[in-house]
Length: 66
Image (cartoon, rainbow, N blue to C red; front, side, top):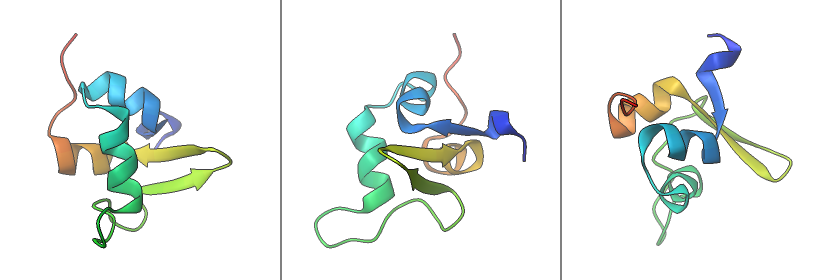
């Protein structure tokens, strides 16, 4: 894994065309459900959520074309 394979939730939302709140909920879980990202695919760093390309592709498919 390279540094390019890790991004902020905001950056991932832009790159995949997904709402930022959707990614944050996938990190923390919602309505009593566990997070959708697997261990090692996300973490919190300060106030920012970091996610991996692998996790994004598993949950949301290939990155959106420009």
